[in-house]
Image 1 (cartoon, helix red, strand yellow):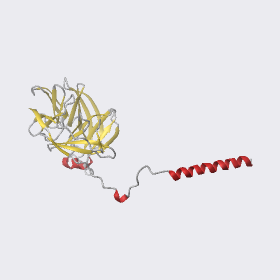
Image 2 (tube, one colour):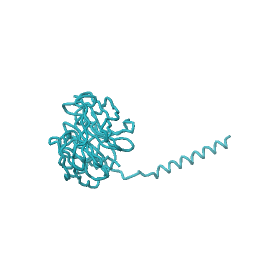
Image 3 (tube, helix red, strand yellow):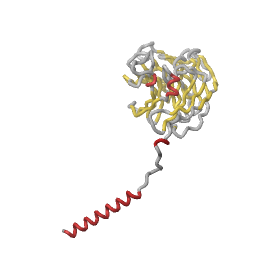
Image 4 (tube, helix red, strand yellow):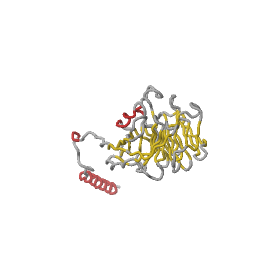
Amino acid sequence: MKKALRGFVGSLVLFCAACAHSMSVAQPPGPIVNLEDVPDYEAPEIAQLSAQTLNVWPAAEADQGVAVDDDYFYALDNTIIGKYRREDGVLVARFAAPHKGLIRHMNSCYVRTGKLWCANSNYSLVPHGSSVEVFDTQSMTHVETHSLGLTEEGSLTWFDDWNGGRIAGFAHYSGNGGVPFKDSTFSSIVTFDKEWRRTGGWLIPASAIERMAPYAASGGALGPDGLLYLMGHDRPEMYVMARPVMGPALIHVATIQLEAEGQAFSFVPGGAHEVFVIDRHKGLVRQIALPEIPDLPSQALAFR
């Protein structure tokens, strides 16, 4: 018994000696930095760019936004959608629902596989409620609906496909259509899975959200370069966002001046760096070529 005990004690001594040796030679993973030497964060410089108008068409419904596919564009005014030929700008069909009815404020749409998917909210009513409304582009009839119900994030204004689910913009308003305890700075970007279950999101940086006040991003879409493009309510500006490598706020990488007064827009299909936008006060739809975005800073990532 004593022999066995002596063996155990010897092994324990050797083990402890090995541990002490390993701790004595361990090194920190990187250089030790003095706390006083850590600088404050500086946001990357925002590139200032300009876009070029390619085509212009009149459209009576061009008040909230516009969507586009290979052959047609779809001008949107709350509960009315006009379908126009891209070739000559001729109105060929229209969907119309009563004002302030079951749908109230369709703000933006996009086209996928013969269907027009639209973001709808009960703006300017509170509390905020939102839904997704789907139309057949050939017959211009309503074919599907999905209600998000009461949405604490605000009013749904736009959404796009991302990462097997969706990325969407929600608006709060300082004033009409808002609630007293959340102003427009509470507007944000939210991600969902394909069943519209929330999976994450980001804040919109002050450099953009202050430009959109007292409203929020009325339009948004992922571009062919994998970056997120946003437009506010009335300024002729488009804000280009990237994902942060860490943290909850998007990185504002560029602002583009263009011939449009805010609201919802749509990228042309096929990967071209062009959008269809509206000039709501003139009742116009414009096709605009966007400039290339400079290389991203080290703290920013594309969405795809």
